[in-house]
Amino acid sequence: MKKNLSVPTKVAICLGAFSLCTDAARADFINDSHATIDARNMYMNRDFHNSGSLGPMRDWGQGFTLRLNSGFTEGVVGFGVDAIAQMGIRLDAGQRGSTTNLLVLDSDGKAENEWSEAGATAKMRFGKSQLSVGSLQPSLPVVMYNDTRLLATRYTGAMFTSKDIDNLNLTFGQLSKVNLRDSTDNKNMAYAYNGLSAGDFDFAGGSYNFTKDLAVSYYYGRLEEAYSQNFLGLTHAVEVSPGVKILTDLRYFHSDDEGRAVGGVIDNDFLNGMVTLDAKGHGISAGWQKLSGDGNFPFLAGADPYSVNLVTHNTFAKQNTKAWQLRYTYNFSAMGVPGLTFMTRYVQGRSIEVGNVSDGHEWERDMDIAYVIQSGPLKDLSLRWRNVSFRSGNGLTTDLDENRVILGYQIALW
Image (cartoon, rainbow, N blue to C red):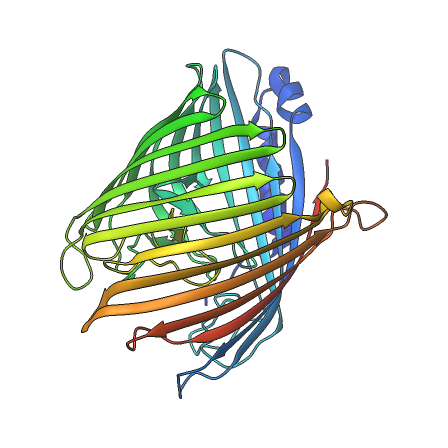
């Protein structure tokens, strides 16, 4: 693994960027700035059931993410800079070649003792529009960065956002490199299912709010030499009685091949959606999807697929997957216990096509209990326990049970 600069050196470089503004504009640049440290301690225990070569995998680590965000210089066009520095520390590790993706592994498959990285973003503001160039973490239907381990995925590129037209949010840009959640290197963009290097990723689109409760969106994404994708979405909320709402979330993708599909061609349609009844702390949801056509549902390496059936372990995005979900949540603040929440869900997929399997099936059951301390010296400290059971049929993949324990805390520096 390549030698990294020490974290203090990287932080000093990031802080030094704030001196780039002129003296006349420094007030807004500094006074509107803020800095935070996100601390995340995470333990993962993954137990495989039908694999003779994969034993239990138990990894434990501590992650720190420092974010520095400046304001903008004064004037019609304002300039600023953001910076991010990340560090991970191995607290314990299981066998070599672990597949938890929690820790960074060296060339021999052994977990590193510590690793660090940093990135910076130059930004320019004009009216309600902003251009950002450098380290990015977009959260869009065609590219959603992953933040489910110690450190989050980062991309390198340029992104333009605009809110100058009332009720309309526009976004477009290009990504050229990816830094994965368990890596310190910037890599070429790639298709998630085969990891083959591809060209740049271009994206564009936006969302429009007809009312505060009804919004539609369209986005386009194209990974050069891999795939192209169109997305349509609709979200709606209606209050049927005091304290009772029905929430609807519908999503549709059409994806085409650009030369690097796995096992053939990408030409598929992916319709998925969820309806939720939200009533006085209770949430009852029903979700459904139909993936039809050729190939798996494509998405970027380092990103998550934008699907209601993206759950703790599985994506339910293999070729021809039809799936349904039942989900229940409860917020204990309705019982006078603020900060305590509970979630459980069950997803079942069928008709899956992988290799020689033409009617595969798989299911996942998740349970999530979280508590955020509301007062005292440990205020805002969060504790979360995630439990997963995943099973597959027809030799699709490996069955497992998994537990994750996560402690999180954010420190505002200024």
